[in-house]
Image 1 (spheres, rainbow, N blue to C red):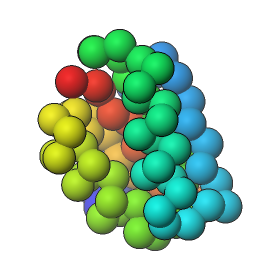
Image 2: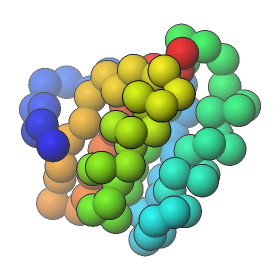
Image 3: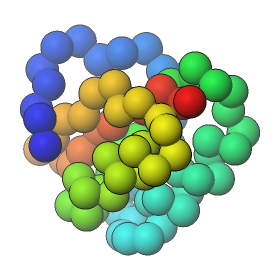
Image 4: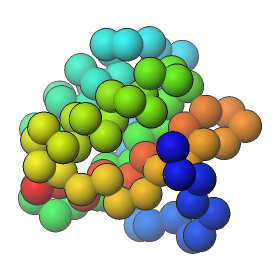
Length: 83
């Protein structure tokens, strides 16, 4: 995963999946994006290493844009622009 150190994008909604493991983070992402509009940005915070594989595939499959991803000492952060 690319470690982007530039400023974080603004986001419309935060989804904290800290402590959850596959498939829960992706299931919660599916539920959250249903309540959002096209073009909005979802920030996802995760601790499950599987998200480094699952989040990009989620975006690719559903046509969302993975704007930024980073790994921190506490886990992973993703910014997703909805299609």
